[in-house]
Length: 185
Image (cartoon, rainbow, N blue to C red):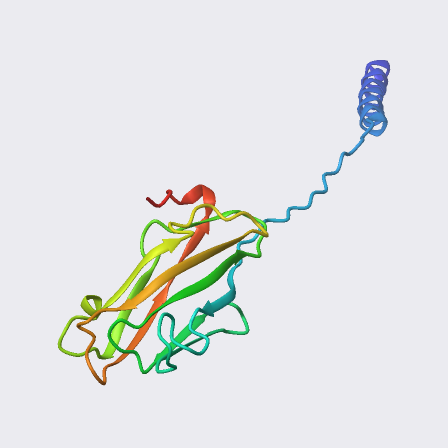
């Protein structure tokens, strides 16, 4: 009986040692993953603005009206000011739109050039006495990173232009990454 107990104890010890040895002899190796993700950017800015009236009114031999342009220091706002406009006064307005980002952009499908008018536009609706046409560079298409697109518009004050009108125009152009916007047309 003593022999059976001794053999059972020995069997349990051997089983325990073999399990411990298997656990102790188990080899391990580990693989690591390191990665870096840098996303692109969109950064559309005005980089140039000009008006063709730099003194003598275009097609006239007088300096009556004037047009000035400026761009904010962050490049996000283009401002033009027209003083002393009169019927048939006209000029070319030129702006450069530059994509300083790394991802191509496209004009957003809605609200690309949304604007509002405030002030005293006179008895005729603003759109009835100011015409903007003969544009070049319009409609804007895809603008790749680092690319500049020039847009020119011919601005003409119609015969219905009211006297002493004061109009403030605020507008915006919105751009999306190119693969999310539909072409304008």
